[in-house]
Image (cartoon, rainbow, N blue to C red; front, side, top):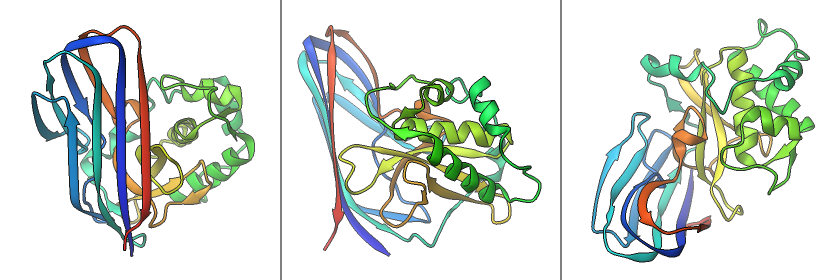
Length: 263
């Protein structure tokens, strides 16, 4: 059992003031079989109104409005997570089919399909074994390099570049799995030492009806240092901040994440 303290800070800065800001935030860890969240504190500024709900994938969201004129918008979240790395997350088997099929960001093109054809047949592997095999091959072929891809870069585009960040590793692995119709999810969360949010994948195991988390960026199974925030079909289902507003011009975003052992 790991006990971790986490803090998440996100700030949007606008070139010129905005108003009538309607937002939806998805940056709040919640408890499940693998992690227990306690002492969570949330501060959103400015916020005229806010409320919470679960989205269609079960992720905790806060939505609201900031009606007054403002040049900055920030959210701060902190709390403690107790994580048992020995437990996986039980799957709702009625919802599994939606995670078998490609999305706009995880559609396999010529380069990913050619890479996939170099793999041995699926028949003698479980879904999880197959996913781990593909993760290991991806780790050999793909390189971590910030600044080459963006939030709307598809898996095929990133793979063709040969480099990217955690979002790209996760979505390329999802694309490879979905060629084999292996149900898989994109996950956003936090780990020590990153300084920002991290992304990994969950693979469905029909043998145990569980989601098993693996991290293709680091080529390993997720352990007790991984705090999950949200999951979905791809990164867009896990978008941390969505919203509309009047005014603003250009905007910049600052994210700072700290995860450390709690005493």
